[in-house]
Image (cartoon, one colour):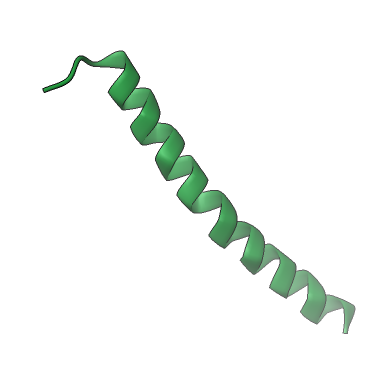
Length: 36
């Protein structure tokens, strides 16, 4: 049971962290370069 909860939590974490990292990367690239 605990393993199932851990798997669900890690999956949820991956889904919440990935978009944030992508946004952060896009924001960093956009702030370092001028507007095209």
